[in-house]
Amino acid sequence: MEFVYYTAAGLILYFLSDWILRKVEQMRGEAFEQRTLIFFVIILVLALTSFKVIELMMTS
Image 1: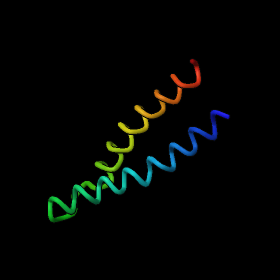
Image 2: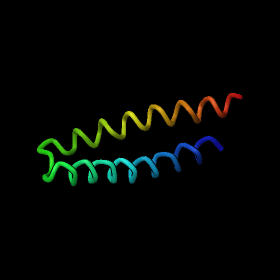
Image 3: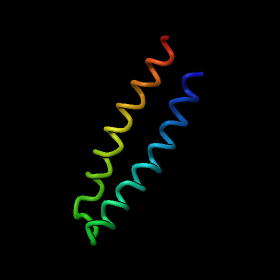
């Protein structure tokens, strides 16, 4: 059942990261040159955090 939680979290994080990046670019007024790298950092931080929360929920 864990794979369902991780898959759902991955999909949500993908769209959330894209939304966050678009909002930051909108506030900035222009697109970032290294857009892919910034997207990767956003999704990495969110993934590490959410996957740890899922792991803690599964062990308790």
